[in-house]
Amino acid sequence: MKILVDSGQMKQCDKNTIEYFGVPSLVLMERAALGAAEEIEKLTPKHSEQPEALLVCGLGNNGGDGLAIARLLWQRGWAVTVVMPPEPRRVSQETEIQMDILKKYQVPIASSIPDKNFDVVVDALFGIGLARDIQGIYQEYLVKMNEMAGYKAAVDIPSGIHGDTGAVMGIAFRADLTITFAFAKTGLLLFPGAEYAGRIIVKEIGIDSRSFLSQSPSMHYFTKEDLREIPSRKVRSNKGSYGRVLVAAGQKNMAGAAFFTAKAAYVTGAGLVKVRTAEENRVILQQLLPEAVLETHQTTNAAEELADSLEWASVIAAGPGVGTKEAAVLIETILKHAKVPLILDADGLNIVSEHLEWLRETKAAVIATPHLGEMARLTKQEISVIQQQLIETARAFAEEYHVICVLKDARTVTALPDGRVWVNTSGNNGMATAGSGDVLTGVFAGLIAQGMDPELAAPAGVYLHGLAGDRGVREKGFYGLTAQDILDGIPCVLKDIG
Image 1 (cartoon, one colour):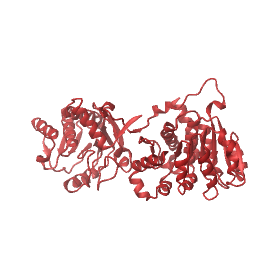
Image 2 (cartoon, rainbow, N blue to C red):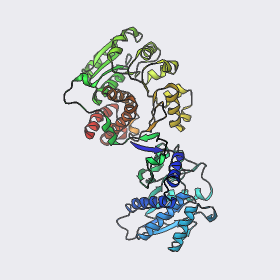
Image 3 (cartoon, one colour):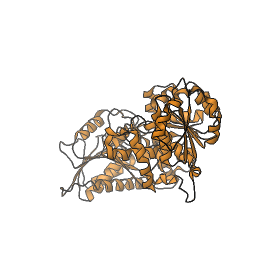
Image 4 (tube, one colour):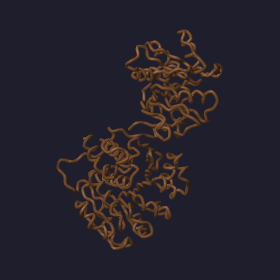
């Protein structure tokens, strides 16, 4: 897992590295500049004997990074044009040093952007500390930079993007590439910041997890290597070795929800799946998923029949397509009597939004998987407010109700009751399709059934689900992706990580 930080954490790590470990600030700046220059050099156009770069630098340390990058590129044969606002008395100490070095090398610094195109446009105006909307000459710079041709690279974070939330502070630089340092920043992963950042490269500069000192990193994101945490298959085993999943899903005419959840649990590796669903879904599910054990009922109020199944299961997935009024007793019974991990999704969450005390009373380890609309019902907040505060909202809900909260959006956030958070980086907009959430619920169940801790299965399942969607898009495109394509991608992703 990779560490993810907000602006406050990054500043503290930077301070600890300088003050506690004794690494000079200028050394960190030089290492950042070396890393960024290395990546920018890779952008050298093949047709150009002397590539040209425009570096627009601010007055803080982000600008100092830009000035150092300009010097390094100039020393390597690039034609560089450096632009800074005409406010030299307000520069940081490190940036003033970098300015003096450039002057001694006789590299001029202008205050206006020339009317010409460059091979590469480098944004080093603002770093992660920006807290107000961009105005004045800085706004003029960004308008012109965004309009220019050439490859666009941002230093640490695109100027105008809030380092914590990813919000656009009036205007922002649209980068093709963002070269950030030490750790990825939340503002780069959350939307709309992620859309402005382009491809993200994290360069090591001498700040690592030890710079947290007595604190532990609280935010992470998954990489493909982390999926190796999924329990390996035993040579000597049987279906009982890989868990028993109870899926309570699908009222009349909603057989698809039950199918996608159950099938996803199977293709993720579960040994045995039992589907509790409406009697009307029997024939459909027997045809679509003959591997599953069926337990049908005439009405969803037949909760007393659940006792044996609840005892049988090693993990429960409840809620997809069960309806709301009809299934209230079903969901209440599961929450009150379940003793194994429980994934609560879709209609299950809508029911619970009117009975939040059930979450406080349950003895089960609950993974709640709301999308924005469901989270609005659970928290009684506006969707627009939640979308601007994904991490804070998921954390608060997880802590208050002692659940694992998987808040689904373009960047899904998984929060644990102890404050730990994962921001997902896989997936795409083609996955905004019916049944996708049901598949995710089944993935969680399949991982937990095989013995994965729910606290790890939740962020791992989100990442695996997104990778399966990415694979499907490569074959079907964004418009044609369906939940079935995501299902088909899961075993392929698991095979690849082998």
